[in-house]
Image (tube, rainbow, N blue to C red; front, side, top):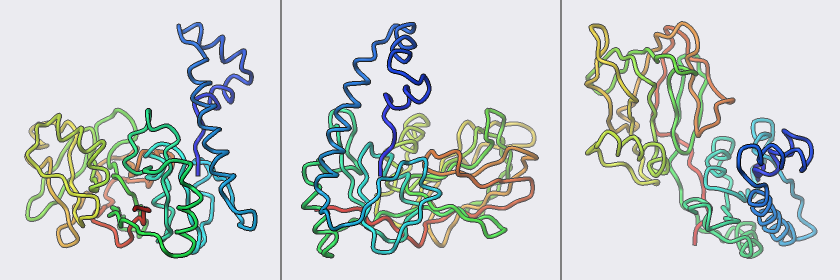
Length: 289
């Protein structure tokens, strides 16, 4: 599993290297840097591909094709790229093992892509021979009242698809509040290192964020607006299987639910629809040593 490099995206947009270079130069940037990163990635990709035994069947799948690719039960998924690529893959899997490889540790943090490309051969062998140790990362599931659901590794976003106000009624424990905000997120312990942590720090929250393997989630409301009709008292909390978060939409159009930053793969969340968010039954099996 890979995603396009910035250099590949530039070529897709501008057709040739020369046109891409001209585009960047007009903005005071050079193409050499993005081209250098691209070459490093391609070298890492070649290392991983050469590590795959010739008698194994394999496919290279781009992130944009994830919603159309069918994974099989015995597949081993090798994610080569930034940490977010593992999150992008997670909701399409059903207990398959994921090996995260970091092609550029000076650029990517390596929270989920923990291994070097040069380790690929040994790691894949362990995974195929069922000798892999895995960390079972909690996922979050958002379920609409019509049965549609979305599984995510980091977080789900609930709100309006644009800059307009997100309007809804939030129910948590024995409390209920109508709100108008910039939407809300519900994050796992894995997601607590990203967007959720940023929101927690900005609000100076004292809420203890969950660990990646804990069956708890944390929710944060973004920029709740206080008015005569809407409140701001219910803006964060911890969610578990017995205490889910329930949201009822009051958005005529534009209400959406999406996860892990993939805005194109979303659930429509129209007026009167109810959404329940809780820890999922499935987990991500991330290879670890």
